[in-house]
Image (tube, rainbow over all chains, first blue to last red; front, top):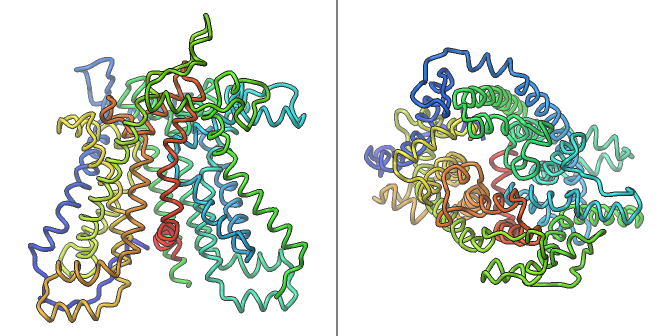
Length: 307
Length: 296
């Protein structure tokens, strides 16, 4: 699964059946398509990020060096977006991971009917992110949301709570929606990890009288180390770049309460039409993600050496 | 080893709780789509539509305006002209997604087989380039890609989305399929090659039948990605002829005039296809995810 070891160098029946034109014909369309939508955009965005590009001032795009980067980093609203993204990521990643692990442990039990549950668990992850966001908008709406109705009926609240329009609650609303949407992936990966634990290892520890917690801690979790690290890094990347959910659920508001980084970069480009700063923000995000991916590949490599 | 009855029951209860957490949001959207506007704003709302109505669906699919929205006097009737476009948007989404699946199966299979079995200079570089392209976050390349599409005169077309989504899904497809092809036994292929078959015929007659589960997995992934994508669809499309479902329901949901009953219909239209796919392709999706992410 690693880039560096993905193509193994073993020999083939040399000469037989293989030819330069065949290779070219099979690879060229992919390389062209990927190149067109990667190399040019990357270069273009890099250039844009070092120019002053305001769509409100067409025709005047002077080179400004790193000024866009310095400006956005010094900007108070960037700092708010960074802080919001840190809070969001800091809460969603542990929630998604722990929930995914619990669900995987549950689904791994041989209970009748759990086959159906394993099919259901993919559903929140399979639907469009936009749909997931709107579903939660429908549930959490301050004027008629179903959650408010339920809470009122059981007496937990005395009046409807404006989950999405309260500056204190909106972030948690987005977090809940994100966790609901994202936990299936870790659950599936952990479940796959659990299923490769040799049966005799699990049995032996049970016979030894290991208590449930000790069994989890010393027998199960070590087997899940690989998937766990991947889930942590992958979910961090997903949380940092979340956009669709903010767009439909809160629009970054109220005020700047849910202004997450990806949303903020989008708004810089498409609402305030400051393409130079938008590109600089996107590159800051790209660099952050790249750092995480490098960490991810190293982790995976280490994991592979040890297994 | 027999588990005690108590632990059996408590595990089953946990399972029930999980099913509720997964399904309740869907159930509420389904219920809301069969309610009238007045019933929906009732406090507290009823989970069972009372009275149930199919008028929201009628409006979306036939344009027939629900009676409930015509009797609200001075109040603005919460209706949106965008809702009846949803069936067209659904067709657009399917068309785009199936186009991307086709390109992935065609180009991805050919390229992955070459990566898996051929030896040539630059192979490692080409492979790393294709996989590495996915390291760029979508937001970072959104504006330049918009400009490319504009330069190609493809703005507001489904073809533009098919090309963009293919460029985004092919790296993953090639990764999964290259690993898959490499895991197949080489003996039969070698025998066929020695017998004078060329690579393409070996791929078509020998390898593809064996690789069917891998192909199903990448078809499912590329379908879900394309059907679900929002940012580029939002930037590229502007007319009903090319807007996809996520763009349409997002527009309806942020429109303050839109009734939530109609928004609920939009949700149901948007989730049915991917839910069906997730259920029927579950085995392939799961094994594809595990093969690509979980193999450590």
